[in-house]
Image: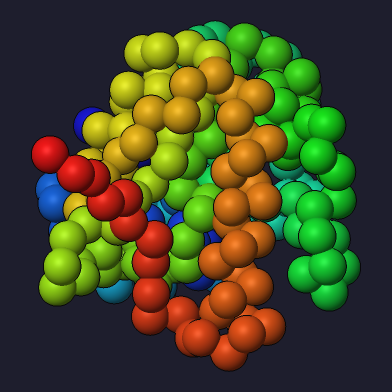
Amino acid sequence: MSISIIGAGNVGMALGQAFTQRGETVVYGVPEPARYADAVTALGGNARVTTTAEAIAASDTVILAVPYAALPGIAQSMPDWQGKVLIDATNPLAPGLSGLSVGTSTSGAEELAKLARGARVVKAFNTTGAENMADSRYPKGAPMMPVCGDDAEARQRAMALATLIGFEAVDMGPLMAARYLEPFAMTWIHLAIKQGLGRRFAFAMLRRP
């Protein structure tokens, strides 16, 4: 599978590292490809970097790993996404990590879906830190990765990617569940940063027989 990742920051690079280590091909899309050439080359022969437009065209699965404020411009850069699976790994963080800029009656993912005409939008890879995406191994089991989206096949594709890199993918149903996933991400951020827990932890799902 070829996976396009828009953005080469912490989350984008962590996901690319995890995917390429498992044999997947990753195409990064950034405004200035030359700036990230060395970092992407270090991931190995399965990764390359190009412009945002070319990366979007290169794959049917596109992960958005950019600041939330960049989403409208990216979404509207394509007049028609032609059924591509668009995985939103962002969070609409308010200044100072004080909350979510979109409130609670909608979500960043739902707002993205309004703009990305023809895309099958899925919310995933937003509820834990980049360190866990690069290395999801924990001694007592796999961390969870909740996934939501209105299109069942697109949701399953995102869940398969999460499973591939070591997460327990959890099907959260329709895209409106992103209204829960984005505040859930704030829980991880609050514990890691404001409560001083650090970034070496993840949430997991426990079950009884």
